[in-house]
View 1 (cartoon, rainbow, N blue to C red):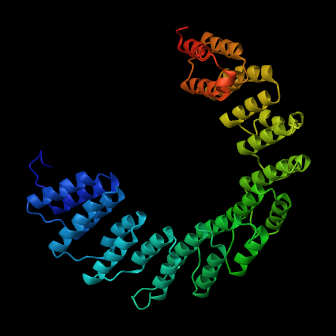
View 2 (cartoon, rainbow, N blue to C red; view 1 turned 90 degrees about the vertical axis):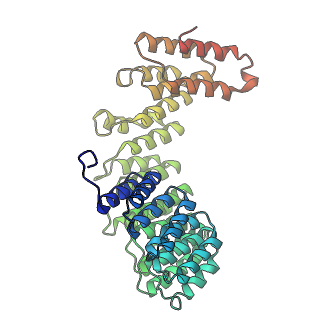
View 3 (cartoon, one colour; view 1 turned 45 degrees about the vertical axis):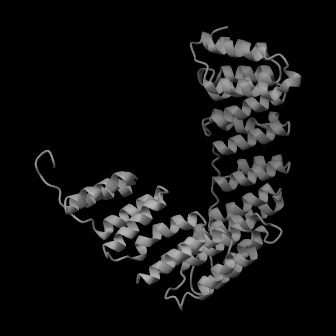
Length: 425
């Protein structure tokens, strides 16, 4: 425009400022546009200022945002809750409740009444510092202050209570919310259950879900997975199985994560035949995560000879192994005393010597004192014209460090290995 002698108007400048602020996240550049406009006698609009305030707040430049707010006041621009919201959020993110109180007071004094969005941000800040008495007061005084709590208000409060360990209080707020005709979203419910399920002494699996259903919430497969996963981590395999069978009776379809949680739990409980049965059940399509779980658990239990059912699916192309699969196999082979098999396995993966499995194998060789074998491995890799990746270097150093000074008093070993890797030895 400038090169063709076309003078930008206010709309063009505003668009450029918006691009810098909201899309490129460059508040300093956006501010230079605002100064440019002003210098040309094109006063920025309140929307321009609000855009720039939001951008500065997102960048953590609160002082710049407050300066722009003062400029708006000096220009007698109308101030709205939308202008104050990003500033209040930045203040609350810093847990500066005193400054948040002062900002809300300044809103009222300037004739801008705080709305539900402002109070929701404020409540989130109070929850962050654990001042739930103050949250109660804010909600209690809502009618007098001209706003009405919404689903976001209570969801924020409930999640805050959960994160501070007040599970029973969170359910009390949930009941209050339902009584007011408000509903948590599925995502909000799953966040609640995620925290609830961690405190299984109070609310146990099925009871938690039944309580939610009594309150009228529609639970989904993610909800079941959340509770099952926490029960699995607690080793409660019978409860996991009971939840799984309850799930099958409902119009909710288990997904691959549901089956993976169940299989992992059964393996940890030593129910390997049951895990194999679930793996082979009709309608379940295993994924790479299933593969990695089974390999790890069966090798840990010394039952690697029973993995034929899994490798049959891998060889048939039903499951595509990934790097984690290969790393897991290398670890399992080495830990079970099959060093030569681990080396041969790495030699034949995808044409030979992929970096991650080589790094894992190198760690175990050096850690176990087979340094000459590690050097032969490096020679084989270089003969193939491949480069020793930095991840292999890192694992060599880590393995030497793990050996400790009592097992590896001569650091010349490490230097010799590193020289070989660098090609200078």
